[in-house]
Length: 183
Image (tube, rainbow, N blue to C red; front, top):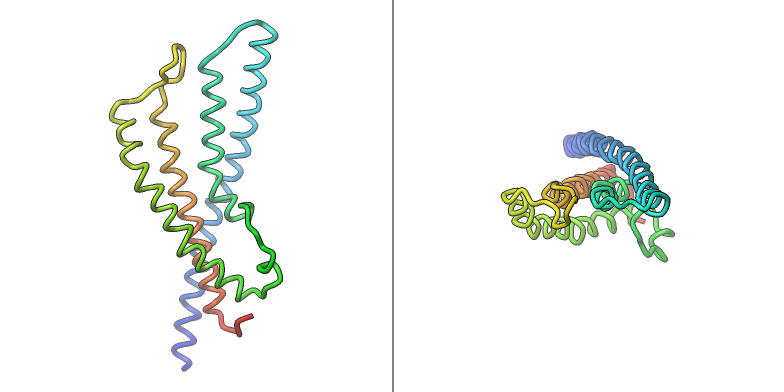
C-alpha cells in the first residue's frame, strides 16, 4: 500500500510540474495579449483620427486592427481558461467541494473542451495550409499581404487553449490523486 501511495504522490508531483510550466506560458501570453490590446486601441484611434481629422483612410491600418483583434481572441483563450474567465453557469458548482469541482472540471475538459479543440484543429488545418501555399493576402487594394499569418492564429488557438486544457486536466487529476474524500 505504501508503494501505491508513493506512485500516486510522484504522479501528482509530476503533473503539478507540467501544469506550472503551461500556466507560465499562459500567463506570458496573457501579458502579451495586454500589449496587443494596447496596440489595437492605438491603431483604432489612429484610424478614426486619420479618417475624421485628416480625411485620410488606410486599409492596412484598418486590417491591422482586425488582425490584432483576432490575435487577442485566439492567443488569449488559454490565459482566459487559466484565469477562469470563460462563461460558466455555476449555480451548483460554486457550492461544491474542491474534489467534486475537480471531477466536473476533469470530465468537462476531457469530454468537451479537448475534443472541441481537436475538432477546431482538424477543421482548420487544410484551411491554414492552403492559405500558406497561396501566400494569401488581402483582397483590398492597400491591404496587408499577411492573411495566411492571420489564419495561422487558428492553430495558435488550438495550441494555446489545448495546452492550458491539458494543464487544467493535470491540475484536477493531481488534486484527485492527492487523496481525500469526494465532496
